[in-house]
Structures are given as C-alpha cells and as structure tokens.
Length: 95
Length: 410
View 1 (tube, one colour):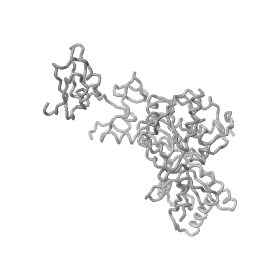
View 2 (cartoon, chains in turn yellow, blue):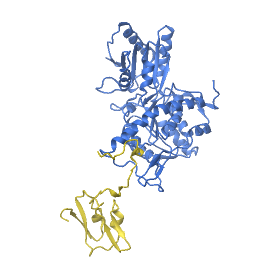
View 3 (spheres, helix red, strand yellow):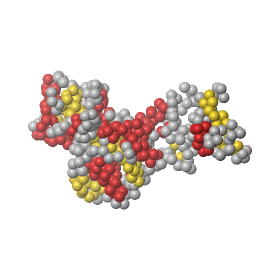
View 4 (tube, helix red, strand yellow):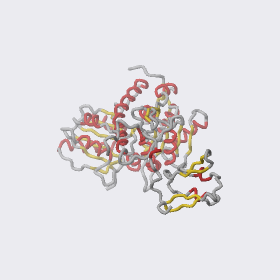
C-alpha cells in the first residue's frame, strides 16, 4: 500500500467517498460491447433512458447518441430493448 | 436527594414501556415487523400512529430484513429511527445489522430476547442477540420494565452522539419482561424531548471537498456505503471499533445525566452492582435474572454469607476495566449465560468475563452456568445451589466443574 493512503483517523466515517467515481474505469472489464447500426437507429433514446450506468448519452448539440465505453459494463440492456434492433452485443476483443 | 422532574406512574409491561419511551422520543420513522414476544411494541406503536398521537411515519414491512433496510435508509436522511425484533426476526436482519453499524446509522432497536429455532420456541433466552454480538451494535440489557423505558430514551442519546454514531440494541427478556405488568414511572413528554433534543449529525468531508452533515441531501451529494477493498476497508472497521470505545464513556455520562433528571440510575450504566463491595463470592448475569438473584443474595447476607451480584448492563462495548475492578477481590465467580455457544468453552458472557479476569493478579476462579434456555424457569431456590457451589470452591480451593448446564435433565 502506498504511503499516501490515509489513516483511519483521516478518512470520513462510514465509507463516505473521498473522491468522485468519475476516475474509476468501471467499464474496463466488460465481456460484451454494444455496436450500433446507424442505418437502423431512429434516435428514439430508449437506450439512453434504460442504460443503468448512464454510459449512453444524448448529445443534442451534435444531434446524436454517444456510448461511453469507459463506463459501459456490457450488460446488453440497450441491445435487448432497442425497438429497431439497431444495437448488437459483440465480444469486446472481436468488436 | 436531588429534586427530580415531575413523573407519572403507569402500569406497563416491558413492551409497552418500550413503545411509550419511543412515543416520547419524537421518532421520525419506525419500520418494523411484529414477532413474538416483541409484538406488543409494534402493535402499541401503530396504535399511537393511528390515533395521531405521534407524527412518526410508520412502515409495515414484509420482513425484518426489510425493516432494518427501511430503518437504515430513513436514518441516512437524518431521521431519528426505531425498530424492534426478536429471535428469528433478528436473525433475518443479520445482514442489514452490519450494514447499519458500518454505515454508522444511530438506529435504536428493542430486542425482546427469545430462543432461536429449531425446535421452535417462543420463550425467553438470549440466544438471539448474543448471536449478534459482533454485528457492531451497542448492546444494553435491562433488568425490568422501568429500565426498558429508561434505556430506550438513553439509547437515542448514546447512538446519536456525533462522535459515536452507532446503532444500539436494548435487550429485554422475552415474556419475563416483555409481557409482565410492572409499575413504570414515566417522564413528561417535554422532559424527554428536551433531554434528547433534535438529532445531531456528524460532519464528513465529501468528494467535492465540502464538509457537510453526513446525510442524504441533494444539495450536498455524497456516496454512502460504497466499496472499500484491501486499501481502505480495514480503516473503516478500525473507526467503528474506536466509536465503540468512546461509547464506554458516553453510556456512563448519559446514565448520570438521566439520573439527575429522573432519580434513576443503573450502576454506572455499564455494570450494575448489588452488595458486591467486600463480597467473597459473586454472580455475574445479564438481564432480568438479576432481580431473582438479588432475592437469593439478601437471604445469604442474612446468614452472614458475603455474596454479591454484578449485572452486566452493557455487553458491547465490553467494560473490561470495570469488570476487573469490581471482581478482582472476590474469591469465586459464577457467570450466568442464557444462551449457548455450541462447541465453545462455555457461553458468551463467560468468555468475556473470564477473559477480562485473566490479567488480574488474583485470578479468582470463574465458573459458568448455562441456564434458562427456551424459557426454562429458574427461581431463587434453584439459584441458591450456585452460591453453594461457589462456597465449596472457596473452601476447597478446587473447581470440580467449570461449565454446568443448569437445570437440564441429566
């Protein structure tokens, strides 16, 4: 353990987070990744609303949907729920 | 004697005394599931809610696991919370008990102590809460309905101290206390509310670098109870243990403060002694058994036998120094356990008391009596034989039987 780790007297009680989780790459161990077919996508935003990780974002300024693979865990909910079947899950290494 | 505040005499059983104390403590949320012998607490409290006598949000949950989860969630918003359980209900809560203590939620819970299945038994013993001794909760055990009432009020004050912020369970023996009508002197509502005040909330430093009260608040978002692995988990557990140690002082402080108000105190809040000064032989017990043992001791004292009693009121945190000081000059000690630690060397209380006395130079012999399981009746006549055993140990200097299953048919 590194010397800069804090002691029990220095940390907030009860495991309150001392730093934002934005820096934790929670999507770096996924097995499957979503691949979108832009021809089929109608930007209905179903995937944006249903992503449990908030990893699919609607960018109104660009008029498009972004999938942030840094936080995507590959659960496949987006692919399952997409009404036009515009998302397919592929093994990450093959994607 | 110091003049105490105005009080009213009521006829209440232990469960009703608990419910009445909660009613006066201005509790925001009660989430509970009824189970014998705790049922009266939940019934009585839901009556208060239905009658509009309290402003509490009462949540009827579908299980005790949910009851603890809901209580914890409410506590996380800064609310004052209470629940009650017993036996299998407490066992079902087990997972959430450690989440509550690890989250430093100052929940107060009454446990109407009851045996654990199997075989099914609804009667009083302390197997349920003794099995939760390492759950990170403060454990207080009471002797009678009056103390049940007083201890619930005190428990909020102890739990909500910002340096402690730990949940407290108050154990009252099933049926012996929960269902037995006693005289209970109650304080006025306003007195209790002034004594407790509003719940105080400790400050924490969040990921945004802000120092804010530790509660769920959209203005000051924070992550509670996240993952802490090899690098931080141990530090959080060390914090919890430190809070327990601080509670040793706080419990005594609250006991004195409450005594000034009500005229009632329970030893120093940690241990309650009866004729223990200059006692040669002593019995250590937890809960309502103390009342019965006092009767036996009075009889022995009349015969000139120097017998005394130590009631361990606070079991967690364990008052090690107090146990040592109170017992070091005795010549033989019997520890009473109303639960079994299967395959262990005696019961839970025996482990602690004998362990505490290992470092005392006099090292008085300590023997264990496991008794009253499943509500098996014990009375002054049978308890007398324990003191006879202790006298024999003092006389012969020899312990013949270290652990006795007291009252079981051999």
